[in-house]
Length: 291
Image 1: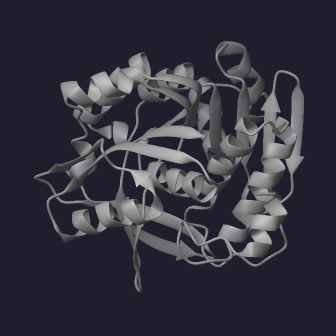
Image 2 (image 1 turned 60 degrees about the vertical axis):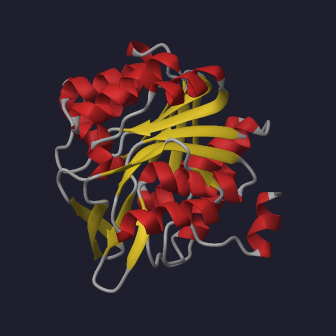
């Protein structure tokens, strides 16, 4: 599978750790572990963390030829965990606020075909990065356009959210974001997903994640629920990104959408039991996923 992602590369910083993250990168890390190929459009700083990020991407097998090195601080997310649930704050004016592509890079991307293009809303807080994303949405040739809503700290506007949904074929959000969308659209929460599918004809699937209650896959043909596992969560950072990657991988591999979500949920259940967003896959997991 060949995936292009756009957005933030940052380091998740907590009281006792500093680990590479950012949803667009985490998704590609899991795509790589699942046997696919991923390239990322992003920017890192001309600083030690930026160098660490580029080295880590190389180790993960992520193509970083569209990653710019800029004169700004590499992105940081300061993470606080409460009962295993993370909350975030970010440094302002950082590298991923300055994502840009050269003319040569644009020409190369325009000639490629991707199985999926992945993006979110966070990196759209910057006009420059948002302009780059708009070019990508207009020019990338991809079978699926996957939007992880990923609403954070008001770094979005109604226009950004709704225009992003309008470009997506697959939308992923959590139950809190569903509540936000219901309020935004002025629609009862129980009717919001049907409304989105009716209003946005490009949308094929909506994935709704509900923490310990598992995840739901909804399309115009009905819905499917994948329960969460019973294992105790150690670190939920990146679990949703592993589910995104797993769903895209297994759907591309020919699985029915329900099977793709079930296997993706199995992967996410493993990730929440480990520290770090992209842990190594043990042989037991590889066997259970049928890799």
